[in-house]
Image (cartoon, rainbow, N blue to C red; front, side):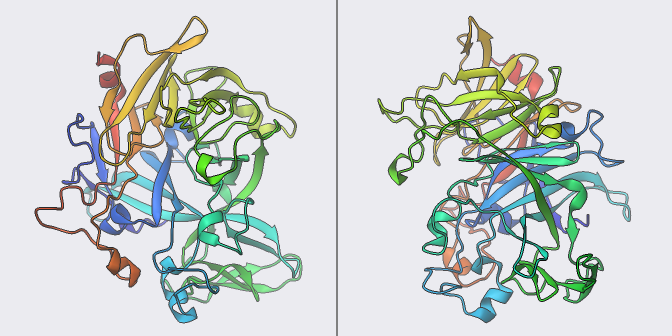
Length: 447
């Protein structure tokens, strides 16, 4: 995979404020750091994927997932493209609702210069289906809930938030909040621009069903999937297809009203808000947990459940897989768990505290049948801390900060221009979005 973007380690962006600095901080390019369209959530990496932390010969790989929060090129949905003309939609990524993308990040040595560098590449996730011409095609990953034709901005992301994911073997498991887990295949990534020139017309081979030769078009950003024997991908070079799904069997008891969207039932189907992998157990286990905000509700008092599944059974079975281990309610008074990961019997949980103060990183252990912090206070960490991922060899606990804050020049984005970072005395909270890692040994040493 050809990486085309560059990370700056230890730039001046600082979502930590009064919280302790991390062991490592990765700063994305400005348009990713300030984007209010793509919001980062989940994290995983090659340490989850392989026991030896290598995918082939490649190591030092992290992945994060982002959801398409809104489309700044579209003020309304009066027609197919909102405020964008058809010509604008072909050129501007922000005119179209694209669903979910993942980003591969790798620290490596530049083969040409011999210097260290950190590069990254965005990859679109695709939901595969058979189209009306009986050909395999794909769309962006959206939820099946709601009515996307009536109001795409309101309904399309009601369910698929990419709040958690785990890379295990060749598969990528992605949380689908209301439904379960979607499964994508690393070995089936499509390259729609194999010569790397950014132009349309690359040959993609023949369709086995009707022997038709297909081509690709990465210049037209208004289309996705196969149309008249041409593959489109909203302009993305790489697309990773969905190949399976695990759906919850329990009855849906969570509220569906918009006002109650962060409340959770105490029984029945859970929400798949975040995922992680525990390789310190035998067998390896996939953790799944809920983001809940009870807000004093007596009907929905849950602060969030968390449970685990033997991941090998998710790989090889087609019938039910029961939740086991860590099945408990999180001891958070107001909820708000954004991510959790377990290692050597300790559960680490990121609790968000809004957009203007550091998040909490909690440490829990299983005591007397319940999760307990054992009197330890939470560790302050980045504002807007999200999902958690443990890199075993380096001993690092990774996360991402999600907030872009409010001082980006939104008018530039609305006009389809680079958003950029503002400067000046009022810009202290600009470009705050980073990937970061704390040493687990440091985390465990805190009182």
